[in-house]
Length: 484
Image (cartoon, rainbow, N blue to C red; front, side, top):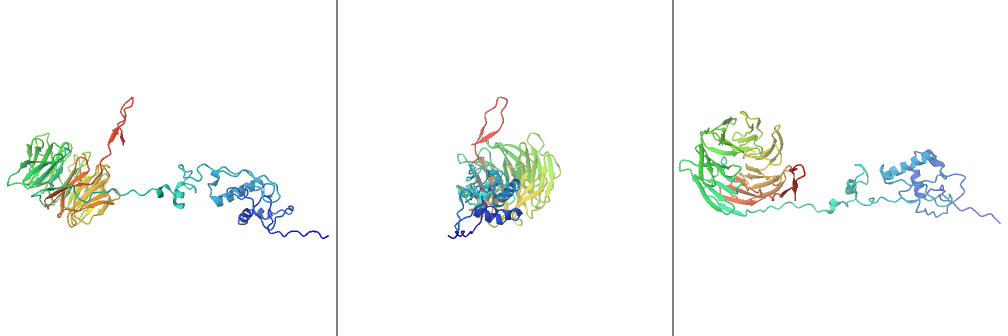
């Protein structure tokens, strides 16, 4: 009887090696001992149809049977690390390495390694990242898988700003003059408006209108400005005087002279009133002393049409028809900064209430730009071309946004985010240049005035979040606030 013919061998695998493992092994040339993995002394064979064991082909287990591999223990361990690194990246070991060797199909008799218990967060988004380059970090999962929390969260819709004013008041004789400042809103919610030779007070709480004064046929109102407390109103006249009135009693308190011609702009800090005039000078007045003027600032070469004190009262910014923006220190006789990038008159000036030393300025028809400055070093931080003459600027105290009013040729009102300078809203309604701007005490409403003899009230900004003081500790109050 003839001896049985041996079965045809398709794959001669070493003990403890699966087909998938052998294919991966054949790609590596780092270990020359791979060619000797098929031992001549191994007499076990596999059938034509080879089915690898599931336990030895797990992607996270590449442990080889120590008995079947002629590679030394040190080389085998290094080889396993190399394979894991090539397949899963250098951080795969942080999820655990296989314990023990895996048993192969047919012969060998090696023990099957116990499966690795997966990490609790392996298939979930991690809140803690093991490293910035980890292939399992949430940042990589966001880009590769498309199942991030960000993709599931809809984008926040832009804040809606009403496109129409909620109130319109007639303002007959409101002048169409770029260099005047005829509207201001007090901290006590009273609006002052200069109309021709008279000043009127409109109480926003009850809509009551009071005529404060009439300068007579030979004079006219050129500027109005409330004190920070809102009790006293200063009035700049066409004859160059500065008058101070008690707004509650409708009584004139004082008249100060010093300018040679019209006083078109006024600015209060806590105790000093600054006035700018067509005579190119800036005068500082102190109500506590008898002198009409305590200081005179000379720096502009044309009419002064913009004045604003910084929020800490330490710096005064002035703009003129000479296209210059000057910044004065509290006690200086010469400007600390002379900024000449504007190419038209600078009337619009505003200090940020959110960032110390951040100043915004706007140029006239030939310039049309809003520019942002760091007054600590005089650097221009940013600028935007608005496409129209910039007449006024005002920062919101509730959010980090700024509103601008414009003249030629759009006559619009624009709200900008800072520092991105993206547009929040564009409001139209005035038929002439929007030359006047003031903000309500709560910071939500603005009033705009134009030569079309109307005052329009717009709900532009959100309300401020109410701060709640923290409880006092046993030693002292921390002085912090908590946002609801």
